[in-house]
Length: 306
Image (cartoon, rainbow, N blue to C red):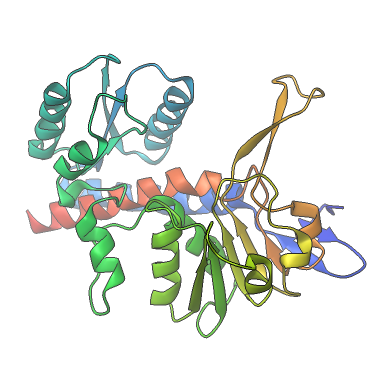
């Protein structure tokens, strides 16, 4: 049961629900102030270009959210919408134009792309100086190496760590388990935690006895895309749980016919955890906010160097 102060109560444990919306709003206020200062000192504002291919409803929704978020903090938004059947060379030309535009400090090509387009070729074409999604191999490589600093970190894992740090969860010296090893979330999340001196284990589809491994963790980041597969019995007493999953499950009581759940069985886990993110309202709001943060950082580098 959730109390009014954001604490889930049970006989065993009180888990603080990490409010991703509130933390995201706090960061956006900070970003808006940084954008204002850039405009005063350099006469320019950060610019983010978003390229959308086709008419997928979920992609259109994400893109609208990103453009609205830019407006909220004062970032200039550039948009190119292309038809589903656009040829790869035409898409590459759009990326090249944004690479060359000094008013654009970040480029995002909305994924997934249609099957006839080589996704890797498109992402590799984005200038590393404008790779605000943090997908470029050079950024991932720098994240993996001690003594190196990537220009950008992937937005969702960056948001996960930000939620932990702003909630007062200690990372250094703790045992962390990341469930999932995708290039977009799992792998960079593990690297970020390791960078902050956690001892990190990655659990994946071939891992034997995943539950016992997760049960040893002080910090759990679940990002495997399987609804409510992490049960409460997996969670160590006092662990911090970050749930990246956003899975639709049928629900006839809802107008849309479904509800969203995470990869973690929330109420079960909340009976053991010290901190936990809800779905929705946890990691989700942070992803776009970290995109804005990366764009502002890119503009600072570019405008202060010019």
